Length: 404
Ligand SMILES: C[S@@+](CC[C@H](N)C(=O)[O-])C[C@H]1O[C@@H](n2cnc3c(N)ncnc32)[C@H](O)[C@@H]1O
Image 1 (cartoon, protein in one colour):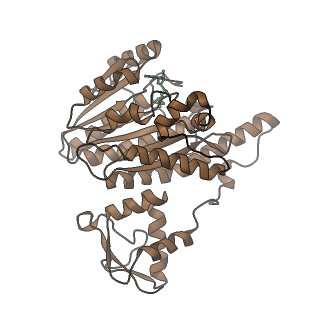
Image 2: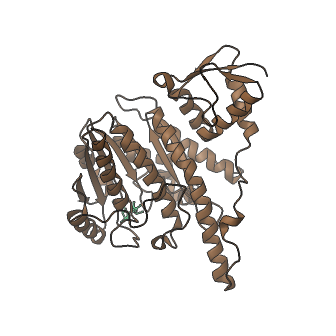
Image 3: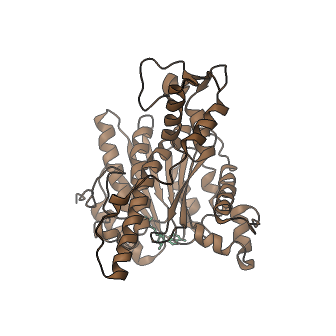
């Protein structure tokens, strides 16, 4: 049976403003799904240029808290939809790519829904399979399904964290070459338990030790804990592949100004970081607006009165990065002798700072206007992309510091 496509809207990320009705009360899932949708869309089109088979594994698929029958507000519906579209898009460009998807779910009822859905509604462009059971027990079977060669994207989106996000638990998957991961790290749960003795064994398996966070302010503590986890993920090396790189997207509580969970992304390709950060930059705006609307609705529910202005009216760019800091970093990076800045160097900058490519482009543009730096390979006037990092076969362009 053909699937109805995108009943929650097939918008571009950053363009949609209203949260679909089916996400009311679980706005954070909307933000997560927007990221998944935006990233997979670009990822599959890029990978499909040079691989004939692409695999996707949803290790904790649900359906869970779905708000509509066609599952378009679940990771299952979203991933299948993107795979179908990517397969068609690639075929139009003369590329024949086989898409294969595996869904894991332990809850018997949810599995029944999943299985029925796949049998009745999975697009014929995707070979979809499902397994009923515990992720922990099914790890080898998942790897067997993946085989050794095909590019595979693992989505790890559990309801809890025990026997899921610890490094020894993930190790067999992390050791697989040609793989990317998006892991939902339940930060708030981990934070609350990381100093409790009864959780010590799990916390050690996550961080390597029990991190001492006494006296550290909350922002710095979050940074330390997440960086420690990222380093441990990167320490597991498959037999082949490039330098491991990670990025984080914090997903906040809709009504409280604190992190509920982090989406941790792991790749071994510098282009992956570039594309992922681009998707997450657009997500920042979506998340801000979604939360503003949720807070407004909450206030209205409490006061019993509608508010005159929609959240978009009051939207400002406060909290955006101070561009001077980025300019200072450029000035430290550049030398009087020309240096190549390509995809690898961009990936280093993005990974080290957590800033976006557009921040680096804007800062470089300002420095150029001030006569302090030059791009030796830029011919003609450029307006937004002052540096073409993927030019010259990803080697980039030669940048130089002219004066302090
Ligand atoms: C957060 S929900 C998944 C949501 C889904 N990824 C989405 O975005 O629409 C987690 C799912 O994993 C299932 N689950 C929980 N623990 C599991 C385990 N150990 N192994 C497999 N599935 C599990 C739950 O029943 C639930 O359906």
